Image (cartoon, rainbow, N blue to C red; front, side):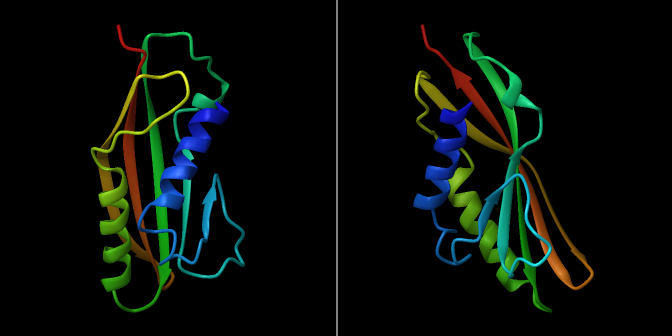
Length: 129
């Protein structure tokens, strides 16, 4: 599923969060010593082991944004940038005619002095007719 991972990473790098997060955007996990703010993205339906032989399919993708600070203002602005980049977006992935993203959940919370925004998107793949 390299094409999928590359397409998501390319959309992130071209989007509005790349610079505000100082390029601290990671796939699948982050070290505890990572500076704030940062974002981690991952597939949450174990799609990496599947083949792409179907005509259409869905994958659930989760982004988690983290920012240390007292104010909720920054985490809200990072979420707005992510939303602008991905909600109802269409992506280009090799071998697939149409791919769309739709936000299915967004949860903001504070834990141990760190604000988090966990956002899930359903990615829809279609091979066309």
